[in-house]
Image (cartoon, rainbow, N blue to C red; front, side, top):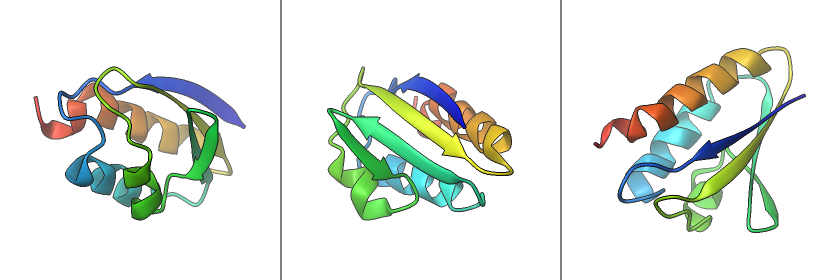
Length: 88
């Protein structure tokens, strides 16, 4: 299992478009991908759940990756966060 904290750095936070990008990217991988925020552990592959996080600019999210392609999944999701979801 790989664990990593990622900071939401785009100005709008995990709004609908950013949440869609995250869940779409997560579904490309076989690994289980969970995100922890404010005491909740949620499936990052479910768009509705990701949108329900309410993660605003500056929020720190903890991701758990578990499976055969967990490092590839982490690298891709980390890059999405570093690219600010293509918004800034």
